[in-house]
Each structure stands twice: as structure tokens, then as C-alpha cells.
Length: 368
Image (tube, rainbow, N blue to C red):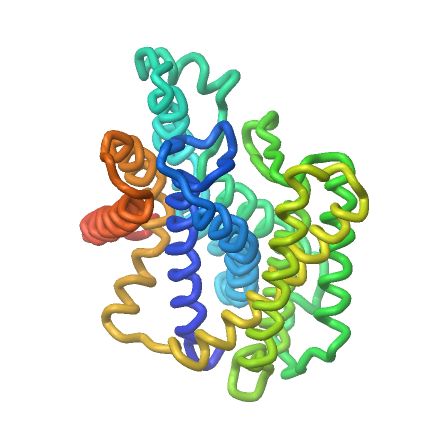
């Protein structure tokens, strides 16, 4: 890559910001999942619609960008040094997060409902049996799987080892086929699993069955995009207006089917509409975000640099201030439209500041 694509760094940072916002909104939405960490009695459908829409494109964007930057890194450093870097940046935070940050997050489920006993008893007992979760660190586990698949493919296929890259713009069939395949996978898995089900039985890997293979495909699409020089001067860049219009239209369609899923989730027609709507909205929104950020936010200003470099730390640490902050705000007699901004802004400031402080340590800076 001849020139750093700052807009991808900035988009990744804003996507992480939206992950934090999603987790804040979940505390104040109507019809929140019964297991959610903190459910505030002050609720609004505004946050419900926000959760439905924000939830869809975030992880596809994250996996695509991860795939886009992974192959050039693997080619540059080779397998051994590539995985040395992934051990520092993915595996260490993943393991430490599961052992030390996921348990207090899960403990909040009991604490916020007045059912908590001692924390150490919970850590040695329920957490590892009936309440095991990786919290936000499931994402790192799936990324490790993605990079493992890429590494195996890299050793088997010369086309991935080749430094040759072709500037090739996708024809109309690429988005059509990609959406068709991801919709079929989503629908097929939905015939066996509810759309929001999490599989936690395997401890090492936590995933949503209807989405896991879709995320792998987005990672692969990111690899393909880098090989074909997407976003570079001579390569493909999504057009702002068409993709934005498609994103808005698909959001309207998707939200109708998503609401119907609450009462008619076993009907094939509703499942099919939800699957297609989800995947059209996911893909078109991702492409619209690429266009928006390349045109308007392709900057390496000091503020963007600080934010982008700290965004990973914000992701790693945000669950604790969000959930414990929401618990603290339970006693505040105020509208959710007051509580949610307080919780969101304070969580970002805490995590951003904490990351800046920790990155002053040379060893920790290599991890976060």
C-alpha cells in the first residue's frame, strides 16, 4: 500500500464508538434482552430502534477492515512475525479480558437485579458454569480464527503470497452474489437457531450461529478488496449518493421485518424477509460508510490520530464503565434521554483517558 488510508482507521474508530453507543442504548431500550447486564426502568422505543439499526453493520465493517489490513501485514512480516504481533495484539488482550474483565461484566447481571452474593464466590463458581461469557472479547476470538484461516490459505495458495495486486473494480454481480450468499446463510442458520442466540458452550469461541459465517465472509471480502486495490487512487471507491440511498431504503425495510420477528419468528416468509433485509442493509451501509469517510474524514489530524490509536483500548475497556455506570444511574430520577448521553460520554472519556495513560508504558503500548 503506497499511501496510508486514514479514513479506514477513522472509520474503525467511529465503529468502535458506535459499539459503545449500542451497549449504552441496550440499557435504555424497550424489550431489552432479559439477560442484558443492566436494564433501566426508564425506557424508550427510540433506543430500541437505535439498537436494531446500529447493531447490523458494525461487525461487518470491523471484520472487513481487519481483512483489508491482514494480508499486507502477513506478506510484509511473514508467518512467524505476523503471529508474534497477533499474539501481542489479539491473544493477550483476549485471554486477560476473559479472565479479568468479562467476570465483573457478568456479575453486573446479578448485582443490578439484587441477586448478587460475594464477587469471588461468583468468579470461582457461577461464572465458569452457568454464566460463562467472554463479554466483548468474543470478537477477538473470532478474529484469531479469521487470521488462522488466512494464514493456512496463505501457505497453500500462491495468489495470496504473490505481491502482485490488480486494480479491478467490482461489477454489479459482486454485491448481488455476496448479499445472496450471506442472506442464504443467515436464513439457513435461522431455521435452526433464533436470530439473537449466542453459543457459549465451547468456552474458547463464543459466537452467534446466524452471523458467524457472514463475519468470516466479510473478512475474506476485505482481503479481496486489498488485492484489487479498493480505495486507492487507481482502484474502486463506492459512490456516496447511490450507496447512501440504498442504505436508508434497506434500513426502512429491515426494521419492518425485524419488528415482525418478535411475534412471527418461526414463519419462513418473515425469516426470509428479515435475512434479506439484514444483509442488504449491512452491505449497503458498509459501502456508504466507506464513501462518506473517504470523502469527508480521510484525515490524520492530531485529534483523529489520538482517537484512532486509542480506539482499540476503548473497545477493550468500555464494558466496565458502561455497565457499572448504568447501574449507578439506576437511582437517578431522570429521562433515559438524559442518562444515555451522560453514560456514553463519560464512558468514552474514561476509556480514552485510561488508554492514553496506559500507552505511555512501552510494553502495554504494544498490546493496546
